[in-house]
Amino acid sequence: MRSTNFGSFVVLAISLGLPLMATAGGDAAAGKAKSLACQACHIAVAPTGDTPRLVGQPEGYIVKQLKAFKAGDRKSPVMSAMANELSDTDMANLAAYWSSQVPGTDTMVLPEVAAIKKSHMVFPKDFPNGFVLYNTKNKEEGNSVSKSYVNTVGLQAAKANKPLPDGSVIVVVHYAAKLDASKKPVLEEDGSWSVDKVVGYGGMEARAGWGKDVPELLRNANWNYGLFGVDKTPRAELNHAPCLACHKPRAETSYLFLLKDIKAKANRK
Image (cartoon, rainbow, N blue to C red; front, side, top):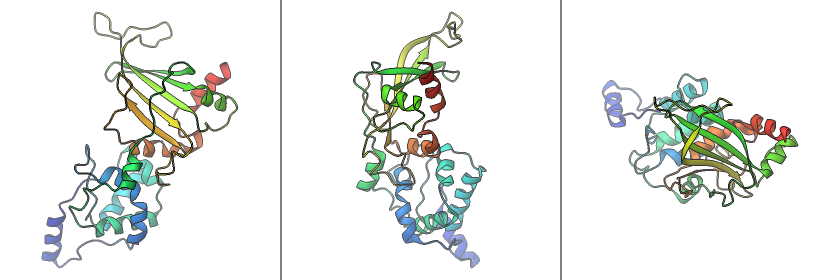
């Protein structure tokens, strides 16, 4: 959602004799409880990227934007995933809560919100031992290659056609592609690009209890998500709430985008 100059809105409304905000008839108290998931991204000293402020926005405006994300009229993988989890009543309640908040009061992150943002995942110390490669993807943007691995726990569950349980770990290794003299990626026999150096890692891991601090709107069972540098240390700036949001619609495939690839690999072994 884009930000609005609320002060200008109020002045214009008063000068025209209009109500200060379009109402959506929501329950602000119910919206406050649901808002914890929103706060993981929208409450900060300085929200990152194009993440807007929500406090003080008119109710009607907030509902309109949430409905636009849900309908696909506004494009955002994270916001569309979140809006798809909301009923019309949820949207009205959230709008009522955020519109009732005073602008400038959205810079303090509550402990329960900090817990949502923080991932428990650390880099698996034995990787790649105990892991199986199941997907390789060439990425033209940046001439990079990603290789995705699953551990034995996840692989065996996929082979048995069961949801991936606690103890499952996915690791994605990001490489720079090896380039030839003309700066084009070098091809392997299978059509994948040859890899040069590792540029970073990503991953997801499920452990018992890891979902307890995450509100239902964002919860991916017990999955947490991680980003790691070349030295395999966690990226300190990571807020894994957007990862939770993006994977939320994949509940039927264990919150994975490529479960079919894991199953295919498991059935070949």
